[in-house]
Length: 325
Image (cartoon, rainbow, N blue to C red; front, side):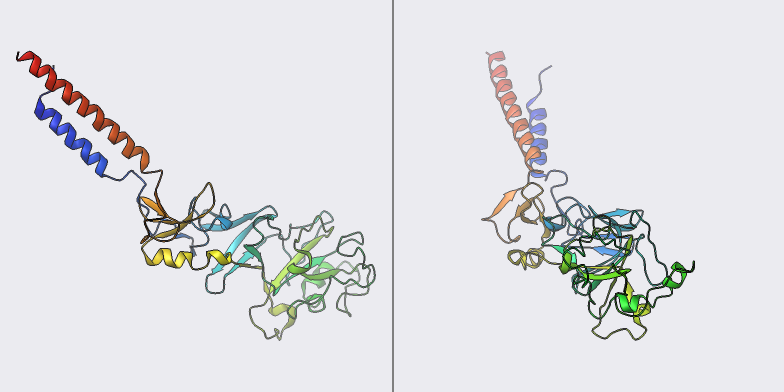
């Protein structure tokens, strides 16, 4: 049974409507890339969704049962806080010692903190973060070349092993009669029971590679030394982040024009997501924009459908003309 002209007109109108509609998922809401995990806001340059945030922080944060986790080759850490004003992350490692408990084993406890070389320009522990390496062997890379002086071991922002030895955790650890370290900042033993280092001194805190039994980490957010010594330190890993100079200001310009800050998943270049199209600068710019691949398949299919219908309509008209002859 041949379609009437009225039926074909209705189908053509439907096709035109399909072409006018954006493809599913092409419009990106401003809230798509700004997420929450528990009570922590995840915003640029971080993200939980592919294509959101800066490419230097991709595949870094994961929300598991409303707990925000940061994953690196050295291990997984719980994110306690993201400070966007001062560009800092506060992390917790459950295998880390603190002032209340010493957690050590011959094979090493905890992996410390290490980042991939390509991510190092974006993410590193704060300069005021001290790593206290515990029970390192004499053969540790820390002491090679400095067998007696222990040059890598020093106080960091007023925090060091001298104060850390005063923590009650050492009383519990040495309650079996072993000699408790005391006196000089790093003790008199060779190697010392504790070696305090900054991230900048060794660039990677890998407990097993450094041949240590465990570690602690503390940070200071104030220039004044805690009156109660190591008992007043903030324990955890304070990580600072930074963006490349060329990127600074990009997200602000993108957001000011109603866009969402993200990146290309293939090239990792900055992208301003503007609904059904992307821009390399902002949503007021059209010269550097490109239609998103999400919208293309739907548009192409609709165009093809229209071409087929037009062809069918022409054939039907010809058939009708011949039938009336």
